[in-house]
Image 1: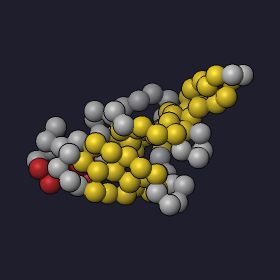
Image 2: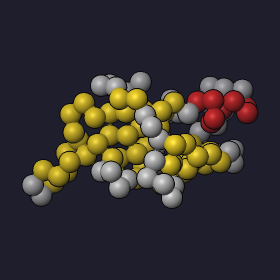
Image 3: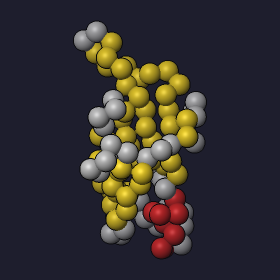
Length: 95
């Protein structure tokens, strides 16, 4: 799993099901905590595996923030490069 913290205090990562996930974090004294019910996700499946037949034929190996606060760049093991404008739908549990 590759992850980074964005400028909106979210941990951004891609899971094994090709979901680009955002979890909001908050400062709690001297430590950080996950904000309750702050999980959001965007499914990247078609972008990640459509070129090779689906399933687990490819996977995200790198994530980077874009020049816009809502852009996330990704690169896959098989050299697919993409950018997502992150306007995720809020959900209470991961997919």
